[in-house]
Length: 313
Image (cartoon, rainbow, N blue to C red; front, side):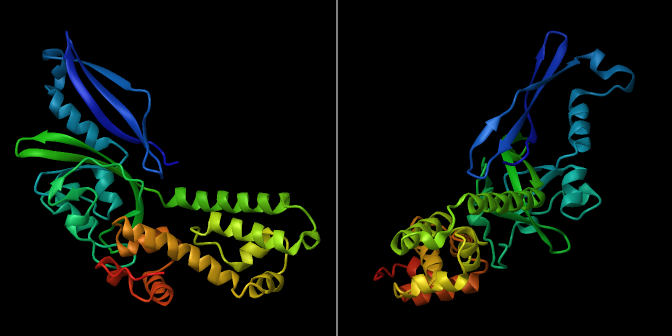
């Protein structure tokens, strides 16, 4: 689960007070979202709001956004950055947020997939056909820093009315540390499964053992870290014995893992997913490996498959 992202929810004037409601929006890997308890800030309105500094509420709101420790910016209807706070600018490699104003949002930080392929604006989950759209994706998205390095993000969006028309407020954050914690936790879970497995595995009926191993692979095939060594370790058997079990079936553990991933990737492609994301979400570490494996298994490349080639087994 990702940490909450702050966002301004609404503001309204009540009597002599201006009430600003803020909420925290949780972004989950599955794409679900949850609104956390609302934080209400009541400020004096009118002359009391200005006080000695003669500050309007709009000026106060801008100051809050600028000082907010979480990255936030506003994208106008034509896709340009209309506002960025300091945290957002620093996150993508700029010291002065004012230098980002007027730059195209997608082409500045979101124009390339993590595999290096081009990310078209029309396919962008935040900007669709040049028009900002609300989106809290449960997908694998990366932003690009000024120096070309990339980092995975979680983000939330909310529509906003601007003088020039509709726009979008975007709050985002780097989730690299979250992913590392997930990997550590997942490894610990695997260790727990391995320790809880019945011993000794050699005493199991050979057919039951291969069935259990196959079920385990099918359940975990989309994890890029899954390989024959991890499977053997989880089931308290040697890698050589594991390979022998699959050889008796005319296969290999690596091939079985790869086939499960390819079947899943083909389904994603059929559902309209892009080639790079279909491979990544199916456990392949790079696009080239995925493309070669797909062609060997199905007799055509993923791009050919997307164009309507359907004579697949």
